[in-house]
Length: 235
Image (cartoon, rainbow, N blue to C red):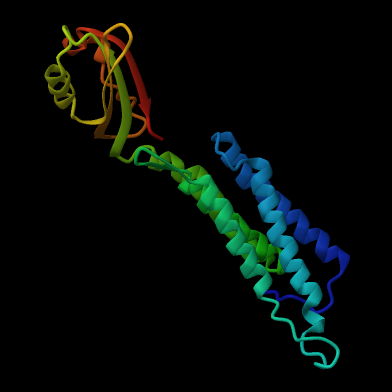
């Protein structure tokens, strides 16, 4: 396994930067294609910044151990560690929490991962970085297909606007239970100008995320008196 040389040539610099750009592009393309907040440009910049940080460490390596009368001995590993800490703040910004739903964890983990890959390339560990990049692409692209087939707890938000004289909440609950769903009231009743009631529910069920399971509320007798239905599945 290669190590960082004391003398860094421009050829090595360009190779490392090129590999970091390719890694950031491949990982970022996956995130951008999925419509994530941290997409192509963000991922490429993070990977490139990590690579540049390690290149800077490599440039400063020959200065370590010189006479203390000329300058203070440098703790070079603080630079990449600081990069990882900074990426933690970016990753935290990609994670969203709303009404008990947490989104963006995979995107945050991807940013952290691509930073480590950039550090590998910037430090001259080209083989290690390439292997890591390949494994990351496998996880993001290939395992996503498997993940969508694994049955799990699904969650959706159901908003109903209904006529209180005709609608039966009990009938709605019984209808969803028959379809394997659990219903929890999130937002209480609020009366509209037309005298109708608006309520928001949390619906949970166990199935494959790609099963397309959506309770057919409008086709059910439980929908009697319902004026408007809003259904949003949490991803």
